[in-house]
Image 1 (spheres, rainbow, N blue to C red):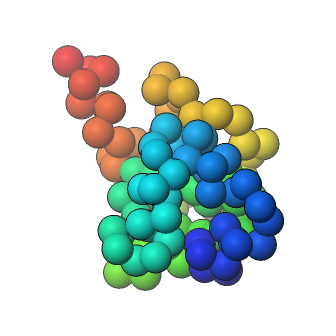
Image 2 (cartoon, one colour):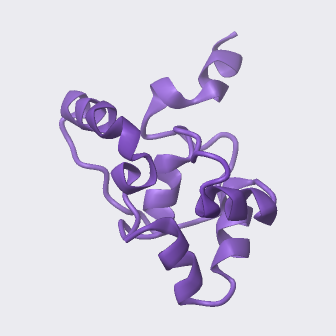
Length: 106
């Protein structure tokens, strides 16, 4: 399922996803409308929040091979956890995409 379809399926999803990602709802709208690409570091969080209804590959079809490589290296498929509000200390399942890793390690 594509992100715009998922957002339109139920009222309030755009706001809930924006709060979960820590971004403004207008940014979620721009990602859904194709005005801005989904940042790679948001992809696994969106997949988890949507309970695998919107996969990383559907969000960024230009990076399908990249996500396949990451999953192969981790040895596990990304599975959806119970969505909770994203906290800055929460580990990213794709740490090489996380800009916070460089800041925390400094």
